[in-house]
Image 1 (cartoon, rainbow, N blue to C red):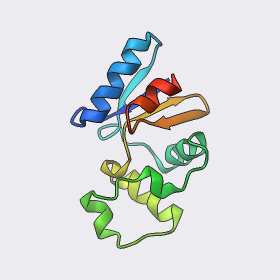
Image 2 (spheres, rainbow, N blue to C red):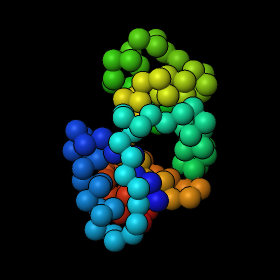
Image 3 (cartoon, rainbow, N blue to C red):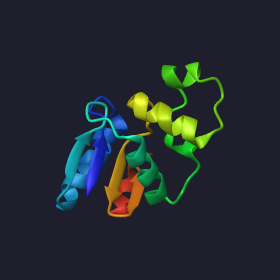
Image 4 (cartoon, rainbow, N blue to C red):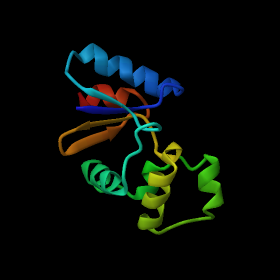
Length: 111
């Protein structure tokens, strides 16, 4: 398993505690420092069940506001790769499945 984490985010910290409490081995990835590639984001989208890319985006962040109103999935994926702060968090990935941990209870259900 891999947990994409932003330590400044309270929801991410809550979800991290749930993952740690599960006792399952996982890799912690601070995705703001270890930026995912567009290819990784495409794989993540597939693991999330091919959700609309907009569901993976933090639309309140400044870089999103400079995009205008993008509707193209490719444009959004490129923006998230360039500005990882746009990636909704936290994310738990287990093989070909993933979940966005908002609210953190979704991580508990996923485990």
